[in-house]
Length: 323
Image (spheres, rainbow, N blue to C red):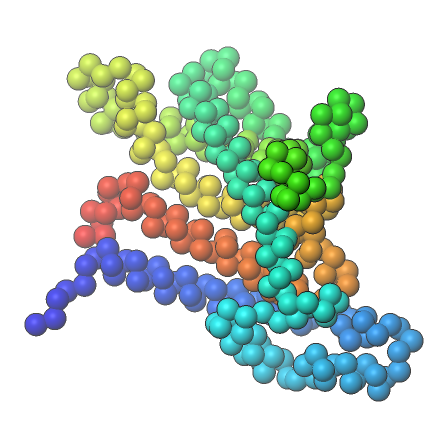
């Protein structure tokens, strides 16, 4: 007799299938979006005065003369095998370009996410525990100001203050990890702060709201009746239950931080994936744009999948509902 499928395993299988379907739909949308862009990659590479025969020959060499469905299926087959094509402009494998640029973009995004998480959670807890008092009003005022500030404008302010006036940091550029971890890390501090300012403000407000909502639950009143201190109630009971909606927001913020690198890396002249996408769009190097966008999209989808799994570990009510 066949053993019944564990409810948790069935839930994990369902979300895995959803992950694969989302990746497939995302790949189709990215491919179609790049197909409708004006211009011709072969013509861009050959120049405006190139003869038509040479342009057609280059199109055949690059595979641009094939029907769109055939090119899309070929791209899917390459991704399924973990392979990427060669850049039209650089003439090198896209995998090497992306790996080189990810060595900057990944630490930058993680540093911005770390700043966002630590500062926002502390600010949200501080504001919630001082509800309707001066500390709460101050945090909410600063968060509203942070939401209103565009990343690129805040980046320019940081450059003017810390690079031009105080000269504590460089205005842009990246020395590379080979020059030592501190010079490389120092070059990422201002860009990470620029990325984190808006997301920190959003997460702080959500953390405050989630904690205030949990503070009115029955189990909190029961814990107080048992004589537990406010600190113990906050850190042992309230914060854990408030983390479920907060983690949801953090998943969305990871996507926003990845998208924000395109702007911030160009402001600070950082050779990351965001700047590579920007340059490839200008050069009509669509194979690089396509693979980079798919990589960033896949990272966002996988992170949200992991957050869905994390929900069950954080909230026991979801484990009971799965059963």
